[in-house]
Image 1 (cartoon, rainbow, N blue to C red):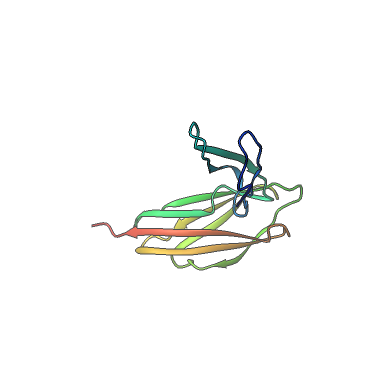
Image 2 (cartoon, helix red, strand yellow):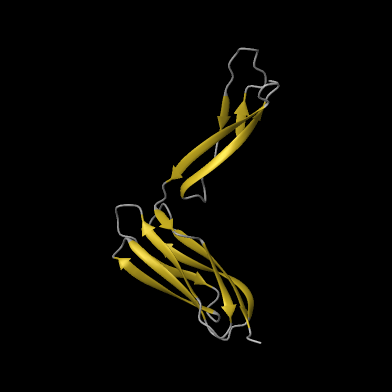
Length: 156
């Protein structure tokens, strides 16, 4: 969202305020905005914002895509790391692909680092989508949601 002075006299100064909503972002990100002017020498100026959003729980990805032949096992992993100085606990809240995909939570470092391994169940043919929701003990982030897409075909 941008707020700016509509008119600036020649040789004068103006103010441009850019506001970036960081919900859903984690880690480093970059945004830019174009400013159009009536200056014949430079009628477009690009303003850039670089930021680092610190989150209580870091996820390597919020999306999993499993693709392959239906008779093969394919596994994808999401890394989860606590960024707050208190132990993290994860427990299943909701999972809607239990007949097509399995998942396993591996605790790598007690209360700090986890890996969530997703594996298709061989024989499940087709395109499907689902979600895994995990409940946490962090009031700042009470729920983790991982979206799952899969596409498995029969061998011809």
